[in-house]
Length: 260
Image: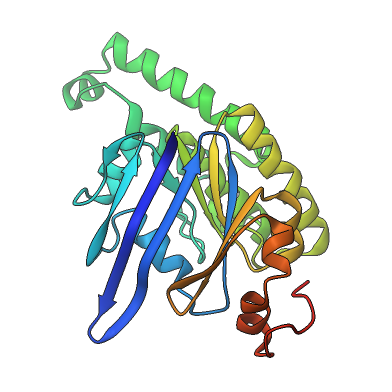
């Protein structure tokens, strides 16, 4: 069974159909890619999945539960977390506090408990901080836990967003161009990190990325969008040699040279 199932998902903005009849099945433990030229509708799909946009039609199910109509925080609580194409940290907060915000989604302490510093609240806060520091250790950010997020180098800010998403304890992690703005060494480290997260956290990952080398290297299955429509889906080898994909990326006639 699919953990994440998307059926005939569509959205229109005025007369523009940004995504049309999008279908995707993501099985437990899989790492799949969603690629396409600029403006293909990839981030729009993520916005639909996470409740930023309401679909015009179609159905989104996570572990059998329909997510249509839920608000973003409810979808996150259901187990769908994301990072953003444009980094959206809380710049004035510390690195640790940015991750703690993600953890609060799973806390059970009440407002009264927090105000009165009840034993349960204190224990829960202590456990949360310990978990956050563990996540920062995994993301190689432990030594910067007390710095303001705004002071981190760009690549570290990208990793901090991943740590915050992991803090929500998701079933499915949506990564929106995590390698954007990274140098060659940072991208190499990111590949290893994504594989580690997939393995150690038992996660399922859907990845949007423009770096074709990274996508072809780590994704088991890839879906290709162009102008909001799926034009190809399959293994990296299949997609890489699909004439429709070549044409979408290069503007070349079908049968032209490979994408990568």
